[in-house]
Amino acid sequence: SRDGIEFVSSYEHATFPIMCSQYHPEKSMFEWTGTLIENCLDAGASKIGVTVVEGGFGSMEISDNGCGINEEDIPLLCARFATSKLRSIADLSAMGTYGFRGEALAAVSHCATITVTSRTASASTGWRCTFNRGMPSSPVEHVHRGVGTTLVVSSLFGGDSVRREALGSSRHEYLLCATVVSAYSLHNTHCAFTVCSSKSLRGVHVAAGLEATGAYQDRSVSGGDSSTPHSRTVMSVFRQRVAVSLGRGGEEASIPVEEVVVDKESARGLGVDPDILEALPRNLSVTIRYPTPSSVTPRSTCRRKAVFVNHRLVQWPGLERAVLDALSPAIPPKSKPVYLYVSVSVDPRDIDPNAHPTKARVIVVGDRAVQSLVASVVGDRVASVEDATLAVDAS
Ligand code: ADP
Ligand code: MG
Image 1 (cartoon, rainbow, N blue to C red):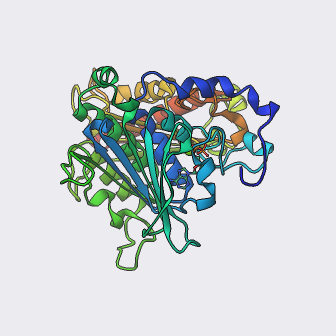
Image 2: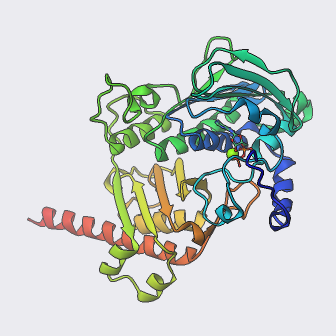
Image 3: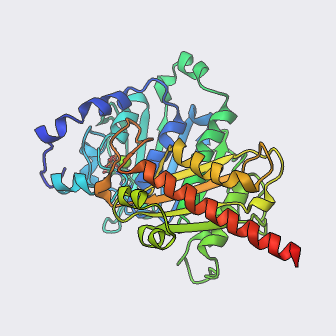
């Protein structure tokens, strides 16, 4: 790091998972999408745009209006284990940023060419440089640009045709990327997102699937410019983004949203089993959003699932199952709500986000207790809504 902190022996045991992911054989652009979005969010961006060319095999551009990158950091930008996000070894046990391994750009630069254009607020001009194999591979150019960063990833796998064959169609790959952007957009309602598929970065944008509609543009940025209507609540932005990601579009799409929020304190008042309470991680708080069970149509499937742990998009099948099972008594047989959003927040000391090469899984202390708690509060909510409906019907 530029502050001269060296990761010495204490961090070396982490090398193996890092190496696994660096040469992860199945990497397609979709698998990098979340990591690159996380870098933009770490940089404090309020606007993030993703353009996918030929399903990422052509290239992928991701740009943000975050803090930008200092020109003096160019030599280290794509170097392995170089990160600007840790100041001391102690920071590793309580991470406040998505990034901490300094590994993503290094890994991408080994599988592809990265062209970065960036400017910080204190710099009078921006810079552009191309990176390969962890190092700058072109002279630094000075360019005009606003504060923020644009990263173009091209020549994925050196254009290897076997790898290309192994990936899905361009449209399929694009939709995978769009799904990741959509999940982050549900969780980060303060930030505007656009995602589009393009035939070329300079050509006409051929938007497909999750388009750059109003839901993802400036208007959805809270605290944006003064012409922005500030009446948009988190829930209205959320609802609109769900609609867009389900392909329903439209400003006024009325996607119903049920929300259940529970933390350790409120769980105590709900008469939750003391053993479960005892096993919960510290400072637990869970937000669950799903469509009202009465709106679920027969045989609908859960097309959008987004589970976040301390703001990281993760896979936690047990938690998804717990919510879906708790909802099942209130919905038609063999049906699932069309979307499910769960955000779990715990004391950083009670998770290990470094458990999987791509951070797709995290270890959460007391994960089974969290599942039981969620199943019990969602189950109670469903039962009380059903009771209320029966009471109305009876009167
Ligand atoms: P990490 O996120 O773990 O630090 P990365 O390889 O993802 O590692 O990124 C390396 C460094 O590059 C980051 O620590 C950050 O300083 C810088 N960086 C990457 N993307 C951006 C971005 N969009 N805006 C600002 N800085 C960035
Ligand atoms: Mg990162």
